[in-house]
Image (cartoon, rainbow, N blue to C red):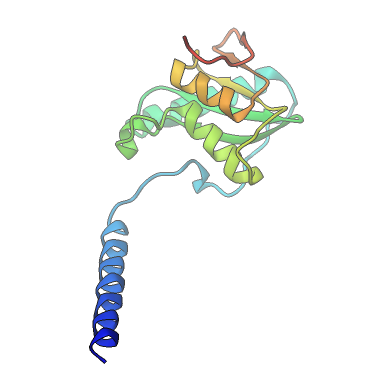
Amino acid sequence: MKTNRTAELSRRAIFGAAAATAAALTQFRIRDATAQSTIEQPARDAPEAYIERAFELRRQAVDSGDQAYGATVVKDGRIIGQSQSLVVINDDATAHAEMSAIRDAARRVGRAGLRGATLYSSSRPCPMCEAAAFWAGLDGFHFGRGIEAGGAPRLCG
């Protein structure tokens, strides 16, 4: 009988701690690239349109007090992921626009592998973001107003 009572107290303690943690987490508001359930697609399927969207996201980042970066992930002529920089907003050093756009695309398509997709960014991706594009299997990336081709993502080193 004592063992059952101990087990019940342990379960209550665990559930109580979990409830307290959940309550504490709801106090924090973490911005997510998927806050918008649908992605507004550009009027035309062209690299210029995808870069323009990246720069629009860059403007949103600046307006919200974050770093001036934006990115889109495109596959088969459609934006499948997008994000502005969320580094400052989320207090997350890894929430670069490119990383967040890759995460958004992976969530939307339901898998980590994004073969056949291309990253468009307002500036050249840093080594961390290029490595993430490599691990996600992106075919290539383009960046900046001049839509410079970055080639296939590579690991640093």
